[in-house]
Length: 366
Image 1 (spheres, rainbow, N blue to C red):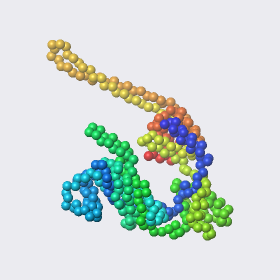
Image 2 (cartoon, one colour):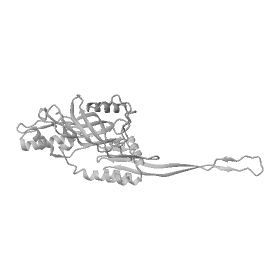
Image 3 (cartoon, rainbow, N blue to C red):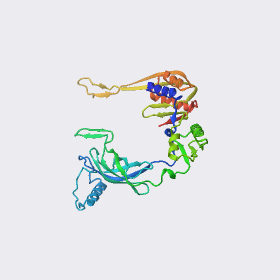
Image 4 (cartoon, rainbow, N blue to C red):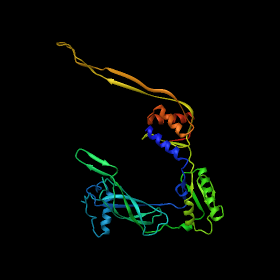
């Protein structure tokens, strides 16, 4: 883990000077976004891994309604016991400016007590938006990455077999109102807000427009937004394509991210630690119970009893003190490695250094 931490840190340190990215990779155009769709449907063709109709009454109602539309009346049949059908929730993201006839991916998730959707087929399902209008129709074979195998004494499950995906499984039927030409003033929004990054984006755009259009177009408004005045002799789509390829070096705040569950520690390039003395030691307490049997002498009236015997051992490891200071990322990671800590120790020390006020960065614990 310490070696992995050192590799991550050194990669960040060595690549910081050349970390130039395109503007379109760090910013999006305000007003251009996806729209979320949702629908309720049935997956059929399962191999006895679907919903039990007695426990999932909504599955039985949906199955009866579907068969009614196909001309089959099963309303009075109370003995339906099929296990090849599962009720699912279908979700999808509708990209901006798509036209009818475009295909999009959909995700399928079980709602009932089905054990697996492997081998199933989603029946024609309407996908609606937040306004209640139907924007797409989904249908197709469900691809499931997980599986479940059950025997009499053991059950094996990998990943999640009750969720799946249908690539290009939905056909767009309605266009979202609005077009790219209807967007008013062009405004770029940074994915990671920062004042320095916003200024650098505006400067890069202005340098380009001075050379090609003889005007200044970009104005930073805050740490997130950059307003752009489009030149009159170029359309919006072409202009956004041109400035999207411009390269800048984004700035990021000093931050340390700690995942206590997996023991992952990621330290940003600009993190610094003021000079601080650190000591860390582990205390191990081991308690051993060794019961002894006390046997009475022959022909005596005594009874056999068990007498407890407890042994307590205390061991303390580590405990040496070290000076940790980081004018740069390489020095900081080297100092932590010299102490010889495990991930849990690194996390505990980083929290203590932050409490002491010596960690000059944001500490994010997940």
